[in-house]
Structures are given as C-alpha cells and as structure tokens.
Length: 188
Length: 188
DNA sequence: TTTGCAATACGCACCGTCTCGTATTGGTGA
DNA sequence: TCACCAATACGAGACGGTGCGTATTGCAAA
Image (cartoon, rainbow over all chains, first blue to last red; front, side):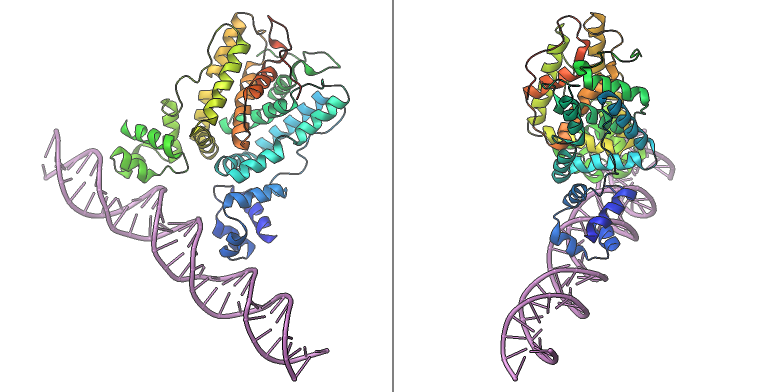
C-alpha cells in the first residue's frame, strides 16, 4: 500500500511529530479522505507501518553464535552504534513518542518487542542449550535490556561498549550456567 | 512562579499533549507573551516544572528498611499501583512523550532519574552496609529497573507483584551478598 | 508621563469533515 | 460481444476549528 510506504518514508526522515496527514496524502499521491477511510488516526497508521516492518532497520535481532553473553553484548553495542548514528536518536525518540501518545502504536510496540520478541527468542535458545536455567525470568530480562535502551535514549545519555557489557551483566545476572558468574571488571 | 504552578496543574489533569500555551496563560492569569519571555517552548516549561518537583508525586523514593530486596520490591509494587490508578498511565506517558520530544525535558529526566537518582542512592546505602558488592554496576541496575517500568508503560503491559519481584531479581542478580542468590519461584 | 503586562488580533499550519468531479468496476440487455 | 449504466472509490481541495508564535493595544501602577 502506497500510503504505508509514504508514511514510513516521512517517518524516517522527519519523525513522528513532524508527520502530518496532509503530508502523507501528498507524498502518497492520495486524498486525505482515502487515508481516513482506512485508518482512524496517525497513530493507527504508524502502528500498521510498524506491523509491516517498515519502520525498523533490518537485522535488529541478535545473532546466535552459541554464546548468549557475547551475542547480547554485540547486539547491544550494535544498537548503541545505531543510536549514535545520524537519524538514530530521532527515529528512536519518534517511536517512543508515538508509543506514548497512541494506544495503537504502544500495543504494536509490545507485540514487536514484548512477550515474543527476538530478544526472548534468543533467550529461549540459550535455555535450550543449557546456558540459562529453565526458570529464568526471560520476559523481565528482555524488558530490562530494552527498557535500559529506551531510558538512555530518553535521557540523552551517551552509551559505549562498557555500558553495554554492564547492562548485559545485569540482565543475565547469576543465570549464565556454563562459564561462571562474574565477567570483566565492573568497578566504576 | 504562578506560570509553573499553572503548568503543573494542567499537566496533571490534562497531560502533555493537551497542554496549550494559551491554556497555561489563561490558567496563570498571564499573557502569552510573558510565558515566551521566560521559556522558549512548552518543553522547556515542563522541564522546569520537573526540576521544581511539581510534576511527580511525593514519596517516589524507595524506603530503607535495611533490606534492599524487600525495599525494591515494595517500591516497584508501589510504582505499579500508581501506574494502574486513575491518571497514572496518562501522567507517565505524558512524561515519556515530553522527554522524547524535548531535549530539555529529556535531559531533566536524566537528572531526576539518572546518575544520582533516588534509586542509585538507595543502592549506595546497600553497598555501604555490605548488601551489594562495591563494584556492582549500580547505574545500570537503576536503568534496568526504571527502563522496564517505562517499557511496560509504553507497551501497555499490565503489571503485578510477581512482575515486580522478577524485575528486582533481574536487577539485583547475584549481587545480594547477605542472604543467598535465588529468591522465590521464578518459573513461568 | 512612562513602563510593564494582560489581552487580544494576526497569519500560519494542520486537523478532520465535506463536497465535487472523475475514473473504475461489474451487471444488464440487445 | 458489446454498448450502456449504476454504484462505488478516489484525488483534489475547500472549509471551519484550534493552537502556534508574533505583533499590537490599552490599562494601571509607579
């Protein structure tokens, strides 16, 4: 659908706040009424874009090299780099703002990043190979990691590899079964 | 300053999105020009409210009963209850939206909840009495907890006492020094 | 008087609704 | 098979409403 693609394009280079129905209609070569016929609000429209995967960059799922800690640190570092890159913070903040304003977008974010997210899927694999205990609170571990990323985005805190390692350390905690508990020097 | 109080009042019962400069001016019995003389934007104005402590409810800092785990679970549970209450989600989402949109508010949120937040202060005390090791990544533990709260708010995920306990478990991880590592049944 | 500020008028942008004129589509009868 | 004709979907954009940020006005205290 041309409207969704136009929305995604404008979202990517102007952000949620700057997104206007008139702008989308023009970009898509469509009348406003046509948009309103299919979607009730800007939020619903953006939520559908999110569902179609038009808003997020490819490959935001962590790798699976077999070692959960390495994979998570690598993944988180990649996210941080993305967040430092041009347009990265804007995209992220736009998503957050959209989620905060619109129940549709918020719910969709929950679907994308929540219960059955790529992160929890990666945790599941780690459980399967015995790197995490079966009773680990995978859900909350994922929330903690993603939440910390959101928190840093919101507060404009710079992030580096050190922070990534420490966050993973917090998330995995005592649950890493195969190679000990404490990793690296965590002193401030 | 009457303007700040008016802003806080309107923010509390209408939220950030519904907040208008004209509304604030009227509520404060002030001309719009006077507001613009002192603040450049709605964001800056709300950021100052945050700084003055006019937006957050009293007593959002955790207690100190001596046991860090109990205190954190109690605190998180309290936050969740607040979040379920009338106006709770709206306030929280308004703050998040304001932070996402405005660098002023975002930075202020970082000051309030970040590096030297009440949460990290509580962690410091736990370190002082030996409940946490001195090299624990306190900063990241705080981020994980607050981030998870933000994440749940954004995704409209309901929260209960169980979730609170699991989140605290993730945050504290192996670092609880005085009474063992695993607490409660964490199976799904 | 002068000055500081509340009040308000202004032009702009966008909202969501509406109306209009133009395709497009699918059914019907010769 | 083909011409005719609703019915419908759509692009375009006018419209009234709201809030923005700026500029002007007029009152009241010093």
